[in-house]
Image (tube, rainbow, N blue to C red; front, top):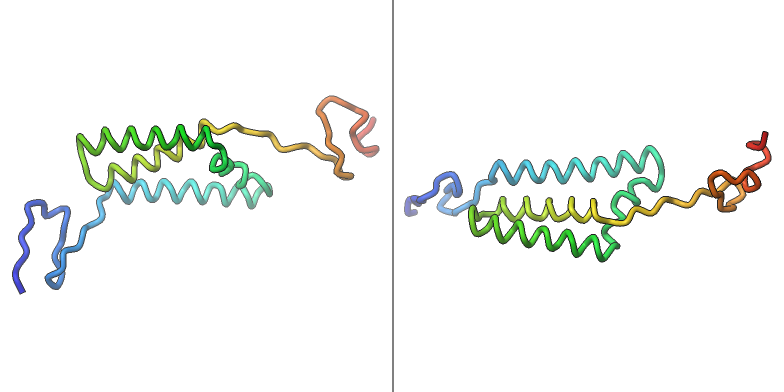
Length: 133
């Protein structure tokens, strides 16, 4: 087997003659940040059913997805031209998801009483008998 010499030893490592790309610390940080967002949605869902689904509802909002994709493309293009590497793409994708999440329309869940009737806040006629004074 030939010995492999690399101009950038922090990028690749040689094991058994095969070239393997080492994971950049910046990529690992972005992956951990994404995992934290997923875990946060899971905890929200366990605390109040439906909260996790509302947190990820931006996936169905076209305007939010367009804004997130635009931000990811812009950051990926600028970062790729200046720095390059896989870490730029991972961070650009994470930033795109965050932008999409922030620009999504937040629809409040409908408030319903025990009978399934929609309740408007401040209207005493729609409340249950137990809640009336």
